[in-house]
Length: 190
Image (cartoon, rainbow, N blue to C red; front, side, top):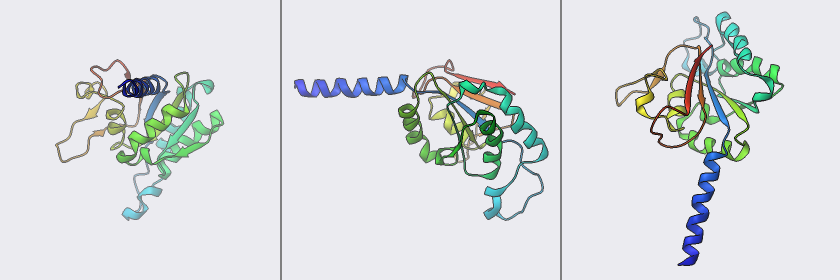
């Protein structure tokens, strides 16, 4: 019986330390993409930024102090990588392409990895897509009552949740599931 209590205490302590030791997460949608692009779905991953998108990617670099960011993660699409590139160059950090910025099934494991790699004094940036960002926020513990404040567009049960616009940065201060309020989530327009 004592052994089980010790194991249970260890497991609870491990999860509590992991949850509290995670970095601050900033989530950004890729910048505006070129309007006239090939209609071939196979080429969508290569869709480049528009002139406006290139400008927004440059503006993103003004949002973070160099010492504040420990890592930059992005989806593998050209538009997301090119959104992250100016920030990467300014901070002298590589952009790590990760599945979680493209695939909702990879988010939970990615968040666990972040908690193991980075402590609470670190921050990371994720560059993702309008249909993935709501799930990055939900799996971080965002309650449904915060959808409007975070500008998530509720969808029908068979549709994806979405975000609109290209000028938001979401900040996740603490991963937990589910949270009761919006205190650990902020949305900033840049």
